[in-house]
Structure formats: C-alpha cells, structure tokens
Length: 404
Ligand code: ADP
Ligand code: ASP
Ligand code: MG
Image (cartoon, rainbow, N blue to C red; front, side, top):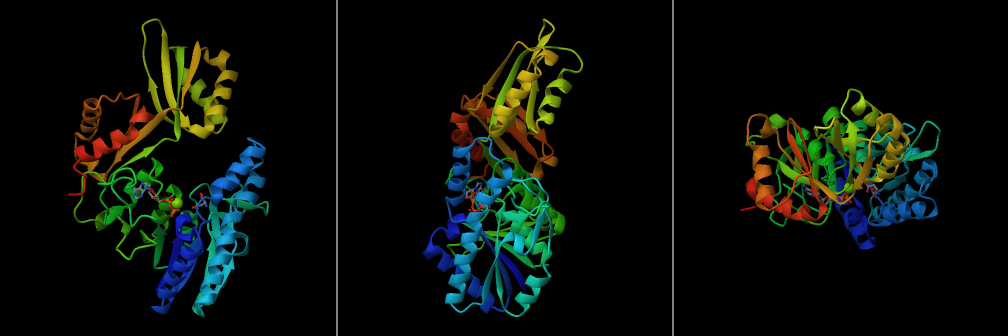
C-alpha cells in the first residue's frame, strides 16, 4: 500500500516526539508500505513566527510573512529525516518548492494548484521516504507561499491525491474526531466514522482538528482520510462517504468558534439597495460576512447586524466608515466578545426539531441568542463569548451525545 502520514505540531514538538514519529514511520515501512510523510512546524513555532511579523508591522507584506512562517516546517523535515536515517530508514527532506507544490499567488492563504509527484513516486518505489514540508508551496511569482493556518492537513491530502496513495493518515494529539472538542467537553464521544460533508461543515464552523480545505479536497479527490493519535495505538476516525455509515445519528457533532466579531449598524434607511451598499463595501475589501440579521422598525429605519472574521474587523469598520454617506446610518457598534456555536449532522435533512432543541436548551441556561444561521445540515447561533463552554456542554447533553 502507499500511505501518506501527516504529523501535526504537537506530534513533532521536541526530539523525543520526533523519534516517536520516526519509529511509527519505520513500522509502516517495515510492513511493506510505500510511505511519504508530511510534517508541521514544532508546536508553538508558527505562532511565534506570526507574532514576530505582526510586532514589526501590523500590516506587513504578505510575501515576507510567508518567507518567515514557512521556516518552521523546514526545520521539522530536516530533523525527522535525520531521525529516520538514524534508525535505518532511507529518508530525504523536501521543501514545498523542491517537490514542487505549485500554488496560486494568494500569499498567506494560497491554494494548491498542482503537485509534481513523479520523482517522489520513483524514490518511494526504491524504499526512500520523502519527508515533505506541510503548509508551504511556491507561487506563480516563484516565491514561497503558505496555505493558511492548519494548512499542513491540506498539504497531506493534496500529496495523497498526487501520489495516488491508498490512505492519508492524519496523526495528531487526539485519537480521532469527537462529537465536540474533547478538551472542552470531557464526555465527548469518539466517532468511528464521519461523512465528508459533516466533517467539512464541522471544520468550517470551528472544529480545527482538520483544516476545512483539506476535507474539501479529500471529498473531491476521493482520498481516504483517517484521523488518529501519534501517541496511542488505538483506532482513529475514518472520513467516508455518507452511504458508508450504517448507523446514522441525528447529529455528528457540535463546534464552536471565537474567531468572529459582530457589527451592528444602527438606524439605516429601510429602502432597497441598502444591503447591497453595506455588503458591497465588505466584498470590495475582501471581508467575508457570515451571519446576517436585519430588523424592521417603525420609523423607516432598521438595525442591521452581521458577523465578520475577527481579523477582518479593522478593515470592515474602515470600509463602513468610508461608505457612511452612501449607506446613511446613524452609528456603528462592534463586539468581539461573541462565540458561534454550531450543531451539524446529515440527519437534520430528515428530522425536524433540531433547531428548537437548540433554542430551548440555551433558553433554559439563560443564554441569549444574538444571531442565527442555518444550512441543510447545520444550525449556528451567536452568543456571548463567556457562555461558549456552558452552551456546548449543555447542547452536547441535550442531543444525547454524551459518552455513556
Ligand atoms: P495538529 O497540530 O496535529 O494539526 P490541531 O491542534 O490542529 O493539531 O488539531 C487537533 C485539535 O483539534 C485537538 O487537540 C482538539 O483540541 C481540537 N478539536 C476541535 N474539535 C475537535 C473534534 N470535534 N474532535 C477532535 N478534536 C477536536
Ligand atoms: N504550522 C502551521 C500552523 O501552525 C500549519 C499546520 O500546523 O498545519 O498553522
Ligand atoms: Mg492542525
């Protein structure tokens, strides 16, 4: 079999763990598999690199940001290659540009366009293990690019597709995908299987166990993804097609995110074209808008509330200020102290009452809902950040997800 093994930051956090990773890789090689490895930067390194860029200049050049933050992965590839060689495994490190992993030019959040797999396949066939830097690639300007935080998952899935691997194993610091973050809810339950669509939705609303783009790619390229522990030998979670799940549950899980901020525009004229003006201003600045609430009031004006990514808040506010005359609002209020809680499951397609259970449970805990959005398999609510953990725990119990 041909396998891509991906190890995240905590799995390569120090030399002892890198040796542990090396011995896991050796085990797969010894079992007769062709193996390629993708690694992240050692835990904490990327955060430090990002912080340095921000400290020097809050609005730094994205190309130089990529030059800096891509270095963490390069260290890991070299160290793991040495550790593998040390235990008798033929290994070679590969930076993104060497493979090459070709991306578009969106520095800081680039998308992979193509991976040249032939040379790696040749080397794997003769028993060499390529150790490839996750998170990075090379753009059309021939400069280093990075894929956005958590991007090594996407590197691994893309590599698995390019190498036509039979499996993509994502090794991390939890032993699978749970009904919610097991660090927040100890009673969370490990899922044996989860549908691509559910995993995609959970990732996109905050479950950072897999980067959203990696799930999208796995679904499109039919890559078999497994999430499992670097530290324990226990079965992980398989991400599969919906029809491969025999016992369908109503919900797959609950996710939360503190990465959004709420903007309220007070007393906007209630006439055609206003929403176009407000959200046109956001789009022009490349600011993604998520939840939207609009109220009708009696005096011909209305309040409009919506959420944007916290990182985009300064740009969103500046764009609204610049468009003030065109929109004609009285004032703007921004609130970063919010959390979005989402319940996700394909069972929602055929079962009513998921949203009402959510609203009732939050009401019983005295938690006020500030905004709501839904999709076919998801309901999200915006609440005060201080209630996030209470809400997730209460909902987990209310939907019968607690481990028995
Ligand atoms: P890595 O460095 O290996 O990529 P991440 O920190 O990116 O690891 O992702 C693993 C983390 O995802 C876990 O430590 C856990 O706290 C978090 N997480 C969030 N939601 C879930 C979930 N539903 N199931 C499992 N882990 C989750
Ligand atoms: N090191 C990068 C990050 O911390 C990529 C990854 O870990 O997936 O975001
Ligand atoms: Mg990750």
